[in-house]
Image 1 (cartoon, rainbow, N blue to C red):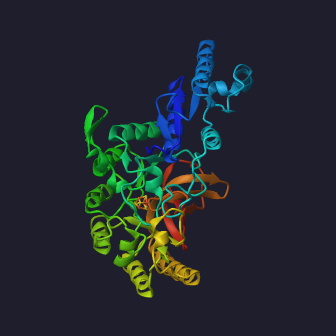
Image 2: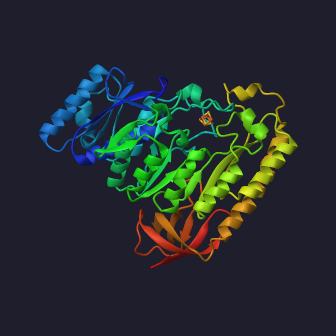
Image 3: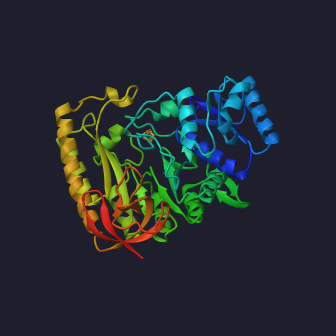
Length: 441
Ligand code: SF4
């Protein structure tokens, strides 16, 4: 956690169900960049998750709220006692917000309101969808495994805001993931600024999970998560050689055959100007090797076009890379300066008009490639996690689709299936983004 991150203290009272709520809220706050601290003095705000089951629990909760107000002053209340908001306000009118149990979104919303982050919206490095995270549906959850970043990409201000990489010990991450699975989560989305660097700062320290020794390292983490029996999806992985060790876990079905690798460019000259990690790696060779081990792997990436100094030749190298790499899902931004970023002082900015032309050509090229790759799935059977069911059918996602950013699978029949179910689907049609099919019963 960087010293500039706003910090939240958390008091969790009550039964195991309340504890699950607390874990969900803490996971969420961490994903959004808040630090979680164990004392009133360190906290900028305190969340009290209350219990109101019996009079004794109610009194304990009211006392805890009073103590938090006295010791810290900024208090958000949630949990079972929250349904009796008038009783709480009568004793503690200073409380900032009150909600009942499982009101994840509202609690996180109250923290955002009363403890706003210095938000630098950075489309190149945002870890979560720009509209924020919905905590419903609740069958998938983001798990943040580290904070900060050791790289210094010239277009990025994350390291100056969040500091160097700080990995969470693997036992703590595994406990959190296990708690989420026990509370009904069917898909874990692993995020950080640089997932492939996990544990570097801790020198891959040995930790424990359920009494078992485990190293704080990407491969061991993936292998442990693979034992939880749910979908595990990896985001923000750089193409370092050691990432190759994770691909067999994908081939074995332990983690989803899906890698989100933000390549950002393909011209070595531009990658150098961008100061990108793994800039010297031969990415095409790496992609081929991954596909040789796990032919079904879905590769997602993001790119920036129109970076300062990008020539027509650099852009052609990028287009050629797209043709060769045959990535499945791709996002692309036309470069725009971010306040405080080193790239702002680079020579030869690309004129706006050319930037936008290149963006268009890039998108058209990739749309054709993505559409063809989806078309190749017609006639195949895919496993789908159901996100939505209504009278018209159901909508879900396959291994190849991360929520919000990738495509969906539309089913013409939703009878007898529920949100969070895993089903098998025969693909009958595809367009540029999505698949369509029938449920195999
Ligand atoms: S890897 Fe680069 S773009 Fe990503 S957070 Fe670190 S410095 Fe920023």
